Amino acid sequence: MTDDPRPQGFDTIAIHAGSQPDPATGARQVPIYQTTAYQFRDADHAAALFNLQEVGYIYSRLTNPTVSALQERVAALEGGAGAVACSSGHAAQIMALFPLMGPGLNLVASNRLYGGTITQFGQTIRRFGWSCRFVDLDDTDAVRAAIDKDTRAIFAESISNPGGYVTDIPAIAAIADEAGIPLIIDNTLASPALCRPIEQGATLVVHSLTKYLTGNGTVTGGAVIDSGRFDWSASDKFPSLSAPEPAYHGLKFHETFGAAAFTFHGIAIGLRDLGMTLNPQAAHYTLMGIETLGLRMERHVRNAVEVASWLEADPRVEAVSYAGLPSSPYHDRVRRLYPKGAGALFTIRLKGGYDACVRMIGALKLISHVANLGDTRTLAIHSASTTHRQLTAEQQVAAGAGPDMVRLSIGIEDAADIIADLDAALG
Ligand SMILES: *Cc1c(COP(=O)(O)O)cnc(C)c1O
Image (cartoon, rainbow, N blue to C red; front, side, top):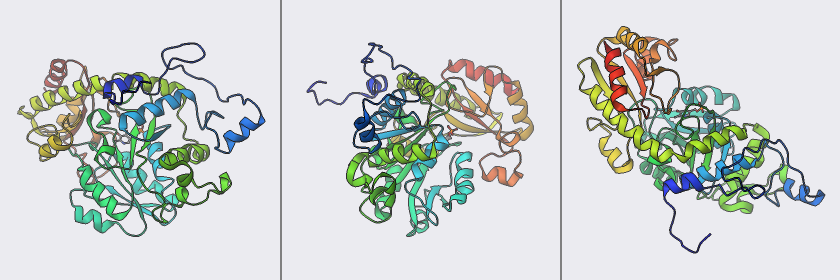
């Protein structure tokens, strides 16, 4: 530590946050602590840990040093007070909602979301007695109208999956503030290299670590980052955080832990009881990936702009939906709120319709046909013949997965090689 108050830059944080030389061995890289349990010093030490009077390691469902290093790093990258890592992006969404929701309560979410999230919020969470109202976030009156006394959160993606939309986070954060509820931003597609939602007013950030943060298609993981700024005790809406917790002798998380309340609750209740824990090996891979996040995102964005511009000018392509293009209706918003770029995921529509899409996907050589995104490799998927094939044509179009649409996740290869593969495959 130095007395220098100068904040470190993003790329320095990406390499150093959460990591010191291992005190036992001097190992400079974060070791993989492949252990389930940790020896207590004595009975008093064990009791203090179990009472949350002392912070330390008990059992790896709750805490593990490799996972802790990752939590510290993603919290620092997002400018948050703390983070909880978990086993997938979808687990992170449940972990973020769990302390806020209860039977009969609802959340308001953007209608432009990752397909899996629409299913999780539209169907699965109903089994917990929770419900979700999907709205167009550009219609701020509709967002306000959807909020009622039982609403406990607003949820949106910064850059949305799949196509070409970016959220005006400050505008939605203002609505959440008025209603006294947290704004949760899924920052998976932007990554903190392109967008830091907490600086724009978000309360919580969720990530699928599976995508850009790990960056090379090796890990399934997630994280919830808390800004530490929400006053959970300002109303009686959030009793999990403000009221006495019977499982910890009546401890009140917000009163006791302040800005760390949401993070402590996530570990001491969320991971303990839901068990959606990230394993230490996955945490290690993600730490490795994060070291190069800033460099990779710069290249992802530069390639995406180059490939999208080439596709937009090609006569075989009907349209390109990418907020990073000057032709996008969201271009001004990108310049204002996402000055480092609109990510590297976009959709194209082909003039030849369904058949042309299937032919193109089949003819790709460099680009992989997979249901993933945010990899170093360029990836493509034709949703209508794969993930969305059970839907009717009308449902496919409504889901942004029309028969003539291909989704591209642009990698960090040489842009000329990505373009050459697309050019040859378009036939
Ligand atoms: C992939 C993804 C998720 C889900 O993450 P998993 O790690 O696959 O569970 C959530 N949101 C967005 C935007 C995604 O791209």
